[in-house]
Every structure is written in C-alpha cells, then in structure tokens.
Length: 203
Length: 129
Image (cartoon, rainbow over all chains, first blue to last red; front, side):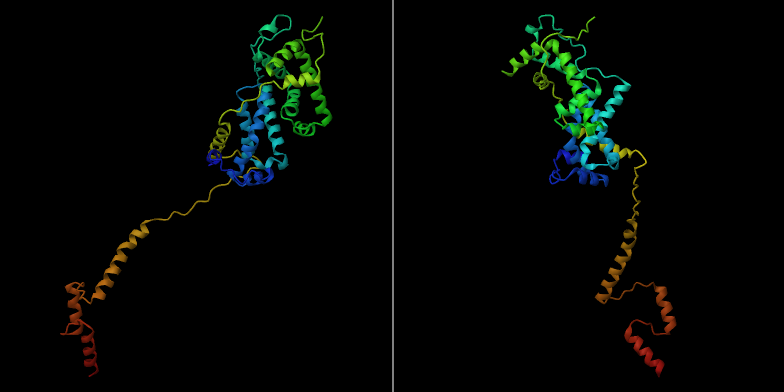
C-alpha cells in the first residue's frame, strides 16, 4: 500500500498540507499521509547523513532508520512544524552513535593527497581536485562538519541549524568559524592548484 | 618543529573557500531509495511495532465467522415449500400420504373415505341430523 502510493505518485492533494496535519494523520495509520512526508523530507535527510558519513554506503540505511522511528511512534515529535529538523537531528545522532561504535572511513581513503611540493599542477584533474575538497570536509570534526553541512550545503539559517543541533546561535557560529578555519588550513597547500584547476573547469 | 599542515603563503579568502566548497561532491540520491524505505516500513508493519511507553498496539477485533451451511440446510426446505405451492395451485390430488395414512383416516371417519371438502360438508350435515 505504502509503496504503491508512492510509485503511483498518488500523493496529489496532500502537497499543500502542512507537516503537522500529515503527522497527525500518520498517527492514525494514514499511510498516504506518511508517504507524503517521506516524499517531502527523505532527500534532504539523506544528503545530510551522506555528508556526515563521508559518502558511506550505509547513509541510506541510517536515513531510513530515522523515518522508521517516526513511523513507529509519530507522537514523539513534540513540535510537528519542525519535523524536518527533528528528522535531521535523529539521523545525525544515529550517525554520531555509529562513529562512536565504529569510526567511518573517509570517502577517499587510499587516495594519495597532493602535498603541495611536487608537480601536481600538471597532473591534477578535476576529479582529484574535488576529491581533495571532499577529503578536507570529511576530515572535519563531526560537529563542525554538521554545522557546515546544514548552513553551507543545505542553506539553512544559522538559527535553524542551531535548533537542529540543539545549540545556541553563538555556539553554532563558533563551530562554523572553526570549520572554515580548519578547511582553509587543510586546503591552503593546494590553494593555487585547486583554484587554477577548478577555474579551468568553469571556463 | 612545524606542523605538516602549516602552510605559509597567501591566506585563503572566504570567497575562495566558498568557491572551492561549491565543487564538493554532491550526495547522489540512491535510485528507488524512497520505494525501498516504504517497503521497509511495510515490512516493519507486518512484524508489528516496537513497544515503547508511548506506543499503543492495536489488535484487530475478531470478526464473527458466518457459516454458509445455513443456506444449504434451508435449500431443501425452500424447494419443498415451492413444490407444495405448485401442486396446490395446480389442483392436483397430492396423493403424497402413504396408504397406511389413508386407512387411518378411513377408520376415523367410518366407511366413507374423506377425500375432499365436499365430503366434509356432507359429513357435517349427517352429524347435525
């Protein structure tokens, strides 16, 4: 029923219904309402989890777990209007738990990083430049990475990101500043190469 | 002793960093990810919800089972009734009673066998006389 609802795109008429109403209907077993919530929020939750897990294949599984938890007990969402934030918070907490249990490998483990001393200027291609940036982001401490993901990649406001991370806005801004400083430091040795390569890529 | 990450050169500006971050890999959404999620939810439904303090597990009410044998048992009765009505409307002598029953009736009414309403009237007149 749930799958058929989504596959048939049988969600017409619910796209304007607010999350709170859909959540209330989901609590009464309305599968169509829940399928609408999945359609509305799964992508962004998956994107955040994917970045937090450095592109690990289990990202989809973790994102699914967050929705599974919601389906089993919708009543645990106290502020239904902020459902997306709740889903992100649950999913990222799961990621943190996994990190504690078993450290994740970074997405480019085994990739030989350019060290800034050799002739990478002539060899590096766009894929390598992108991998260097990805590696720098993946190397951030978890909370800095989450702050950067929410604000920079998902374009949330500082206040919304702080709410998801259950921080004050000042604390979030401090995390962001440290994340950017960390990135600048780690990318500085490749600065000219990256800028030249990616500038070429643009043109 | 210097840190290997330490780099002495032009500091990276915020604009440059934002430009580089815009080239970071975009998470690919796995194909059919939502379908797999909903299939998983359905499977979880069949397994039953996990009991928590805020979860109320609903059990289905048992529906009464209706037997179809009742209709079968009523069928010969209905056929018998219909057949009787047909015979009655056709005005036929039923002759369904066994001969022994006729004997009993003859015995109860004397020599004259009771065969119909006309005889009943004549018998009644005899009684009155």
